[in-house]
Length: 526
Image (cartoon, rainbow, N blue to C red; front, side):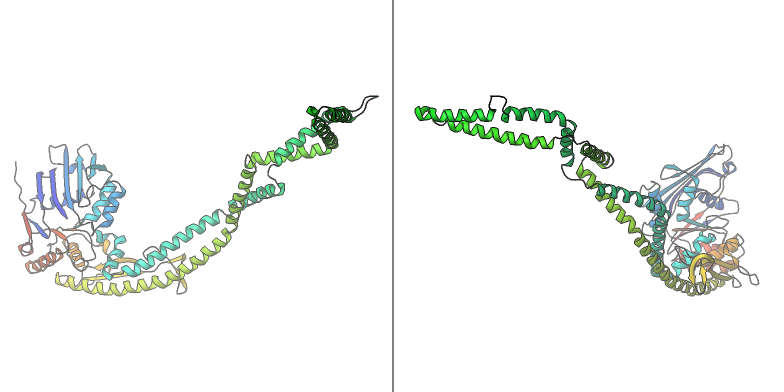
């Protein structure tokens, strides 16, 4: 509700501060005293159009501020909107401010922070409905008619069920679009992964193979030199030259001599066994050299094979990892990714199947939601007509127009495709005929003035529980009505104030008599 209003240098107002109570408040006073100017200031505070002609004569700026006390449970969307723009200071209050300067610039503030006019207007629409010549009137915004009807019809459960299915359908279609748009890229990626996996697997890499190949390459590259050295060593150990025995033979002779020596001198016993052991070691060494000579024979073909194999291993290491575990790890990851890509086809089929199920579900719940709305629309029309009759508008008519619109991409229903959205299948608009004999026409195109205000009062009286805006303002509601009807209007406004804060500008005492709070507006020259 609007708790405080401060106005300075606006139109004929020098300075004004008002504190408002909950319930029904009226403004009375002579014509031209400034009653409607107060309402104009509120409209400006809510984001209405502004120009320098609104400034009080002789001043450079007009300032309007309003403090609104909120019930967070009633307007959780407003808290979310403020928090989204980092404007939420206290969930219990909102401070709006507007400053208009003579040079044309105006400043908008929410909770002390400068904001754009569109932000101020978006917040203001949640706080106040001004019934008169006003662009702030929610009932004149066709986009809100469906919300009013749903709250009147209490379609929360059906609408929640439908909306959940619709959101799931949108998510499924988003995932399907991503899968389909990326199909060509996935095919290219799969081809690359297959190549990498085949390249690694066909190489048949073995643990320790690189070190082994390096050693073999070194031997093959130096085969002639290694063979010569081994042959010289073998010759020195085992070959006999001229009259000289080999090193092994001579060591055997030494062992025999030491044997006899030990027989004579016990202290030298055992030296023969050591010499014999050395002779056997030299013999084993000679045999190893012989085997080695067979391995180090020059083999150009094998050297080429080794070089090629090392080149392959080096190439794989450069591309996929510095060692065998890294290369094998890359192959494993590539295989897992490939399997994921190949399963995308299965995912596509699963998503398409679920999409079909969601369409079937929407085709079930959507018409059921629409039937509930149509039934409630008739009740709403009857109640509004009865309320208008009490307001001396017995000839007025009210109706709710619900339409399904065709859409080639829409939901298949009853042999046609119907446009559907997050709130259902229905396009809803309120229609009125203010006077008998007039045809029904959109509420948003009705004439302004007191007649429209009474029409809105009739609607608001029925939709009181459905309208969550805390403050309702009625300007010029008593135009064209007498005292008896004024009393009826007053009672309806007082009744409406049980669920809202209601502010009204009036000339009728029969209406004003029902107010909880009464301001008399007077103009004094200075």
